Image (cartoon, rainbow, N blue to C red):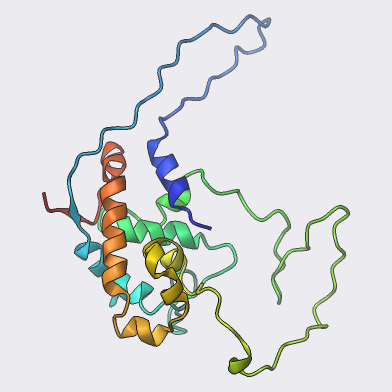
Length: 230
């Protein structure tokens, strides 16, 4: 799912305060308050260079570009697992990816956007600690669990499959590849990524997104990794 509309919404929401009770006093009519919506700030018109965003380090020796190019899930078994080193079922992968694409990681943690109230608190069904780690299917009534031994793993050769979408790293195919390039991207391979086939498109799309969201990040005093050019 493309989380950018939700991110933009979260960045433009005004901060709301909770109201406390009156300690058991008799109910009384609530006062009528006039609420003036906080307007979204006017776009600054500033353009940004996202080179620093693509070059910033997400781990020792690993840049954002290394993370998203090639578009594959990467795992170093010598390091602790957990996104972006592999990914667990409960890892907030899209939120972390968006944070490292837009925010200055020397000023903000990579989980800053993950802590915004955009996501449900957890899976509806508890996730079991053993393979296949998936919760019981929801339904009315819920489907009964089938156990952990009756699996039919396909043995078809790669030539039997057709690529319809690329889902290696979250937000790359959905957010960083322009609409005109999506079909070409889905028909390509990680080897094409490494050869630089889509790097200019990724940079161009990230620049457009940064220019559009910059005023919202600035309003919330969030430090962006991009640098202004005008």
